[in-house]
Image 1 (cartoon, helix red, strand yellow):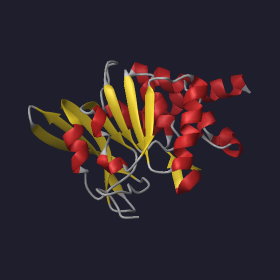
Image 2 (cartoon, helix red, strand yellow; image 1 turned 180 degrees about the vertical axis):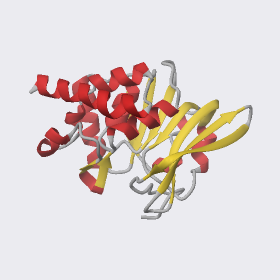
Image 3 (cartoon, helix red, strand yellow; image 1 turned 30 degrees about the horizontal axis):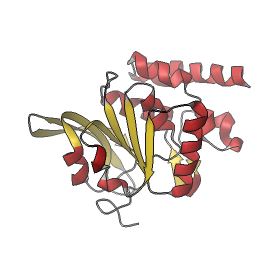
Image 4 (cartoon, helix red, strand yellow; image 1 turned 60 degrees about the horizontal axis):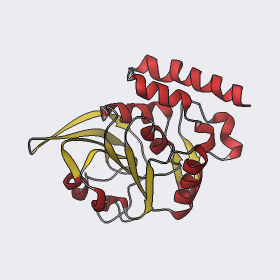
Length: 215
């Protein structure tokens, strides 16, 4: 079983990531090592390394591996950063981040998802991940500023609290748009100036909260 998943991870990196411009070696190493199959239900483990998102509890999803890698690469993490993630979900994105940065703070609004993710973090001994249950659109101000912020759900606009909690310099990646189709946006803060660049079209679950969708 272990060998089968190791082979699947290697194939995922070779076929889904390298050929689409993912060239950050730290990300490639993390995605070849983090056991993605643990972040889905038992019935879907055989599909865990496929080139598509998968459903998880709470009508949420675990993102396609390429999207996880592309969003992570856009943050240009070097290894010493403190990163905020909005939308813990299965925990897979936080797990990848934990392998390439100093500390991950992740916020989830669905208790069952948070409990499941924490269990896997403990099992894998990913002790540099700190998670809490809250409205992610408010960020996590107690530990701000963050060198990088990643948002794994889509809102109608970029939540102002997240912009405020981003360090200067800092980078944030977030899908923005309507409920059907969004643009993955890269926000960069430098010397007090904000710039936004559109990366690609995506489809994410809705960002629910005070500075997102109402429900």
